[in-house]
Length: 213
Image (cartoon, rainbow, N blue to C red; front, side, top):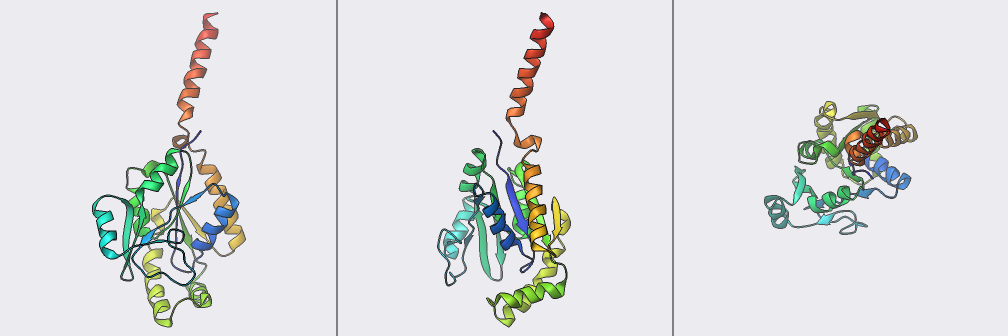
């Protein structure tokens, strides 16, 4: 038995964190994805409660005020946040929770009461030119939005040193393998295995009994 991890993936838009998050969940379907709440409008093809919890600004601010958000941020004029209840329930039963969030949210979670269970990973692009090419290739945003995302990208990248691990995503398959190795290793962290204390006590009792013979 072990405690669940809060696995945080962050990167500037276009560096590949969402793709890597999807691949990680295909590798281990037991991972729970932290569905964020947002005040932005629903896009075509998105499903409420699956892609995001779509709420109005008043309700979002109420949840923040009532302490129901594990983290929250204001990005491009809209609010985003991670509801706390589902996360606490998942890690309490040993289920890892995956977050696809920016550095502000990562910092808030890393400083929360759940900080000892946090695993934070930052994804870097191989170059700024490649980052812009990926954003344009998605075909989801206007030229103006892409320009804003590019302006924001360096602010995101400048926070790379605040993460436990940093990966350069110059090869998606290779980066995926490194990511899986990190998660596998971190699951064995001492703080994630509460049963170790009981096991060591049992070893101690067995040792003392044998010495008494």
